[in-house]
Length: 163
Image 1 (cartoon, rainbow, N blue to C red):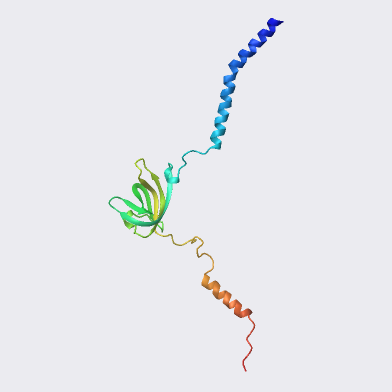
Image 2 (cartoon, one colour):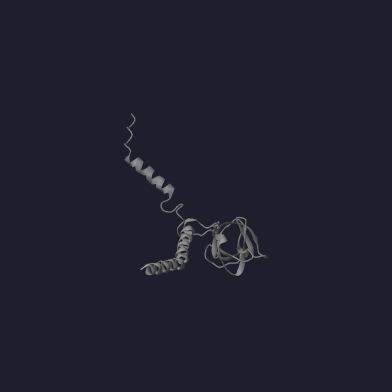
């Protein structure tokens, strides 16, 4: 009986010794995953331009260089490449030489390995027609004021006649 108890104890100790690193390893993996979820990445990109892919820009053109095929918006120089789609606000295709300093420009670009911002699409000029972005859409302010004045005049009691 002592011998069978000794055998069971030895087998249990061996099993524990063999399985404990596996259990420890699993517990360590779970702890690492929990720590990864709890702590944010050390360096998060400041904006989309730091990430790979397409980023957008918008602003007034401050410089145009047709020889270098570049234009500048908000102190950022954008390169027009052969694949760039360059249009006017009307939707007509154009070239960089038709852009004017001071006019609005909006579009998208990708950052190349050497840090250049290569334009994929750009539209020069302010879009006309259609919705105006809510700034003056709907009723005209002057017309609304006239309508309000007319209504107040109509609803106001008549002034007493002078004798």
